Length: 424
Ligand SMILES: *Cc1c(COP(=O)(O)O)cnc(C)c1O
Image 1: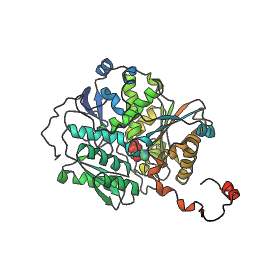
Image 2: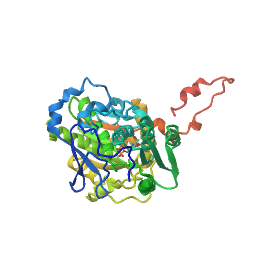
Image 3: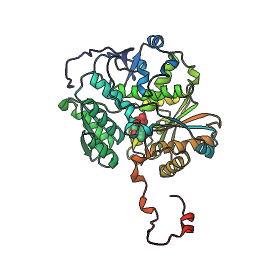
């Protein structure tokens, strides 16, 4: 049983939410109480879009504070409930001409999520999920994490004064372990993979009475991620880019943005034909979605030995697999696997030509951009957006500073040798 501070139902009514809906079979569920999944699969949050259209227009967001909360009419939190927030969202959309030139792309952009709280876009989903959990008087939340989700949950739980339990594989980057510990979460290292951590959270639900905020195990993280699509709509005009390259683990962002575009189309704010082509990018060290895409399947078989330095992409089986694959196919997009062994090279190429702190997950999209441009699938004048989901600074273990040359201040410096030295 879920532990809440007071009995349900929720005292505050959602603004324009009408109900929740099973993504698998369309079953309708009430939105005024805590819901998780239906038949083990995710739920959509549904809105009265006529009411939204009556309440706000596309230009109505412009004068609001630059965070994801500017889209309150399209979010599930009740109008009179305060969000749990660190001003996440409205990340910069950065034009990248030097990187684009390498690939023959005139209009290459990076949506730079590395600047969000906790250095990754996990802050969007977890700000939303924790805000909803607090509105429902939930006292305790739990999450399995490859790194960034745990860090984000820990900080928002700290702000909201919720008890957070974080389960991470023992080889999770030290930076992530550090941030979870600092934020005061109950943290555990698990000798296994992220799905083992997920099974632990699931197994503890009865005894611990926590809300499982794993990827797509509750409906609200998706709504937080959806705001990335709403921001692109504002930042492009209002309009949308031609192609989005998305590093896909659990796929929440890709699914969430496709939902945002669907809502914009239903609102009549965009022509459905103008929705971007969605590209799910994975490393060939862990590419269940790409395998299913290539096999023509709607559900993905989990992979056995996921191996990738892009820890956000080390998701052997995604509970929203069919939602990712539906979005990719409906959008005329692709699912693409790139060479694991080149991720560091692409990180460095992207960071050294854009100045953006490009993490290993987004680096896979850099490789995909090159491949798809070479193939002619990307046109030189397409607006192409790469999602930089997390900051490279969170991955210091991917560079080796011991390879840098040392200088002794007491010795005479050979400036010709300094000049000849290649950049690191
Ligand atoms: C979680 C994560 C991803 C994968 O995001 P999904 O929306 O779950 O596919 C990619 N990159 C980083 C840095 C992440 O933290």
